[in-house]
Image (cartoon, rainbow, N blue to C red; front, side, top):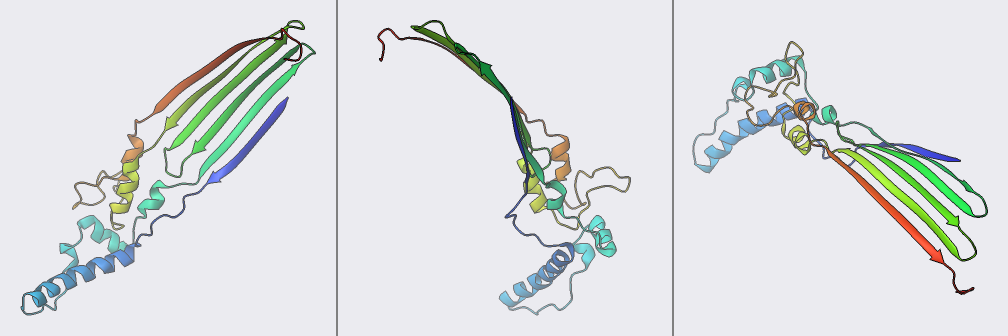
Length: 219
């Protein structure tokens, strides 16, 4: 009887950097301040010196978050440290004329994005029998069942497109569909996980039967 196993941690790496909340706010303010100035210079017009008011740049939710210093790291919201594990149990034995083996395995892979996982179950069995000095026969079988949840590629894309000034939840604790009032296309990535229905399952069975005959000794 043999049992072997390993467990590892799956970490996200090489992620593109994003601005934190205060850096983003200052960037947006500078952008809307410099944009009309650049247009004025290009068109030989008087250069404006008044900064654009925040309430014309940010929505009500964003203004509240900026005032409170509350920002959202959307990438941290959807990523995680996953687990990769593999376990296998096998039994083999026999006598001078008979050999048998059977093994069962379980593999688990949790991706670095929430709701992403793969589970795989394997079963192997075989029997070899020496009938006499001439004939030998045997059979084996290998079966695999996999349950795959690929998660959502849209959640990752949304997390990189949403402003850090948005909110994940409403005041009552429920998830917001849109992170702020001025957003009408990019949804809260948590909704992707709650409503993800993509799933792939498959079962593979590979049987094998053989027979050998040693008619001429040595060949």
